[in-house]
Image (cartoon, rainbow, N blue to C red; front, side):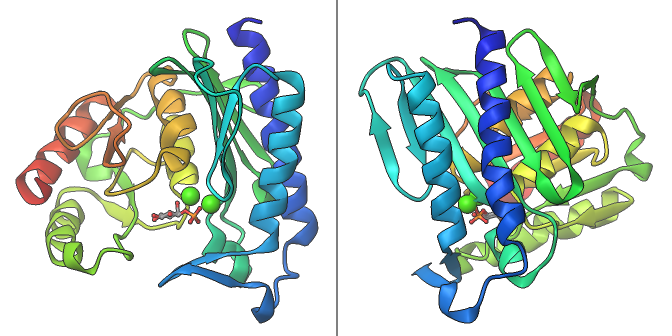
Length: 261
Ligand code: IPD
Ligand code: CA
Ligand code: CA
C-alpha cells in the first residue's frame, strides 16, 4: 500500500468514529461519565469509537500496530507502522453538549507521520493529509495563514491537569494576549491544529499533550505549509506544541521559550 491508500483508510476511520460521536451526541448522562483521573473523564462513546476504528484499521492493515488513547496498544508489535488514534478529542465539550470535538487518526511509519485525518462531525469538516501529498479539507487544498501578528488569532489549551504549571503557563498566555489580536481555547487540540492548518487560527501552543492529540495535526500543519515544533523548536512529537505559519510560529516560539522553558 502507498501513502494515498493510507490517507483513504485514515479518512474512513475518522468518519466511522465520527458517526458514533454524532449518533450519541446529547445523550450523555451523569452516570455515563467515568473518571480516569482528577478532571479527566471518559464515556462509553470514547470507547465505542475507539473499538470501531481499531477493528476497521486492523482488518485492513493486519500487519500494523494500533495505539488508541483508551485501550492502548493492539495488533502486531514492531511492525514499523503504528496507527495513533484519539477516538474523541474534546470529551468535556462532548459531555456538556458543546459541538467542538473531533476524531484524530494518524499513521506513523518508523518515526514519521505519513498519513492522517481529523474529523469534526458536527461541522462536517473532514481534514486529511499525506506526507508529500498536501493538506485538504473536504476535498479542497488548505494552507496556513499569513496574517500579520496584530491580526492573528492564536488557539491554546490550558494545563488543567498540571496545577504546578498554571502560573508559568499564564505568563505565556498573557504575552500571547498582548502580542496577538486574540487567544481562543476551543477545548480540543486536534481541532486547534486542524484549524491552524486551515488558516482559521494563525497559530497554536499547548503543553503536555499526548501523541494521539497531535499526531494527525502535526502532519496537517506541515503539509499546509506551516511549522510544527516542540518548545525547543525541534520537529518532535513530545507533547509540547508550537504551530503556525512561519512568522507566527517564530513569535509564538519566542513567547513559549521565554516563559515555559
Ligand atoms: C484533551 C483536549 C484538550 C487538551 C487536553 C486533551 P481529550 O483531549 O485535546 O484540548 O487541552 O490536554 O487531553 O481528553 O478530550 O481527548
Ligand atoms: Ca485528546
Ligand atoms: Ca480523547
